[in-house]
Amino acid sequence: MTGHELKQLRADLGDAIGRPLSVADMAKLCGLAADAGANMIRRWEVTGPSKQVAEQLRVLAMASDRHPILDNFNIFDRHNVPETERPARREAFREQMRDEVRRRLG
Image (cartoon, rainbow, N blue to C red; front, side):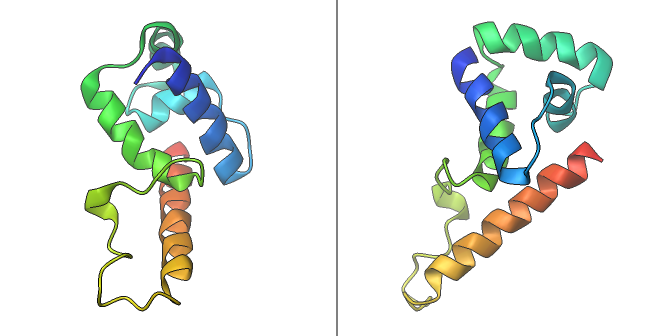
């Protein structure tokens, strides 16, 4: 994940939960203290985050419709899920991810 992608993810997650996210909010999502973590997020928005943080953010990115549901989370396209139910299940999953983002923000 590049710095530009991290900035875009902040905007996408903000759109997904219905409010803009600050750099302190992004720090909370990464498990950093809001004050000190904000400086780290600003640096990462230039250089890109570490691999571990990028993977964590890719999971949270599924809250946004602009990001794909990762293969290891995609249980909706299996043969035992009727095609007519798949869109509703995907949306329910994304809503769960939005709730997780809101929970982490407090």
